[in-house]
Image (cartoon, rainbow, N blue to C red; front, side, top):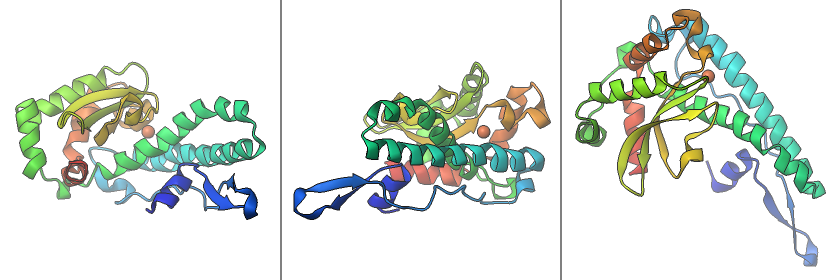
Length: 229
Ligand SMILES: [Fe+2]
């Protein structure tokens, strides 16, 4: 995505020349942020994650975040154009929530793959995981424990810290994207909102987490790590 398109997708603005009097700032008439397709069928992660969950989660939950995010970006552009900065500021929490929901789920879908495509991490990421956590199993145990401990709704993360060149596990609340904690790169995210597992696992979040690790797309995680480093 070009810098300009990325900026517009974030609800950014485009500087447009306005005669000799300088520039004015208007939101480009870009198409709305789309709900991305899943890279596999809804039932492709069974039996680890049911097709019913995947369909509902993608169409209804992620779909709603995208719909709300687009509405908020339109509002933000209107407020900016009118110079109504108090109103613009008042919607930032909603933008963080719905935009975060879109950002987080967009990573999450790609972080998983059918079991038939599963392969453990190798290369530079595999080495880094062993150095940092001791083994892949140790990473999974630590990340599962932290994600299981999220009070209410949120996300568990394997993240990369460019400043320290290290990887670590952490959690965020609600739909806060990882960037709200610092300049970190999300490598692997796991959704621990009840909507991600309740239909199949009821209140057993740890069971969902251990099954999630059966369908992690480590190739995708590795690509994110390689791009970040
Ligand atoms: Fe979700």
